[in-house]
Image 1 (tube, rainbow, N blue to C red):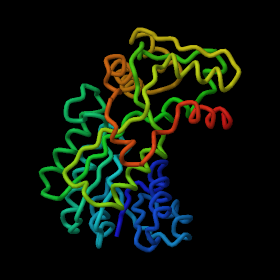
Image 2: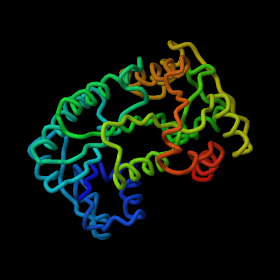
Image 3: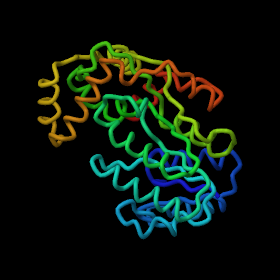
Image 4: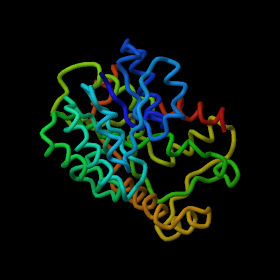
Length: 285
């Protein structure tokens, strides 16, 4: 049985779809979710739905019962991830899970990104657990940039602090396909996959948005202080704004770039082209 945590999230739902497309019987898939009522559509497809709240450890071991392979999708609660993941790892051990696949971040063990710290801590916990594991070190999601293009169209600019740094972005669907491959084939235990698609700079991203939309959009790389002010003035909490700025500065130093071909090898194709991802986003903007 394969269990997917965070199964009602963007990535989790795509992984469930991927498993079904790969022929895994719905009854052999567990959607482990914080709010089971939000997974009613998955239950209708025959997927088992179990409550699993990272912040309520008592829900985790029952949710993982009978699991052969567990996809531990990282929590979205920055600052609480390490503790939440520790609870999940302990529950996996208690439930007798045979393999943990964890969605981490590029070069989590050496990355200087602030976001990487909790991923590194989680990887260490998993390695120390004694359970076989696979680390899916996902690069940046292209959707991080395409999810809200309205300001770019309004102001004709995409702001950031990434400079000319190369970003090995891929879509959620690409990373879901990689997870599906790992969960349905053998030979992955003990491996850390560095996952990312063809690299682009933010200037190239903005140019693609302009080309696909027919609107004037350019990238404006700002000093960290100025970009922080833009984000806070837009309503983001200062701590979260700080994380975004740190990530951009990391990108400017190569922190979001990889030359690895792991993604292509796992999914059997190149990552989704930037032009295709942007075109899809522009149509729905």
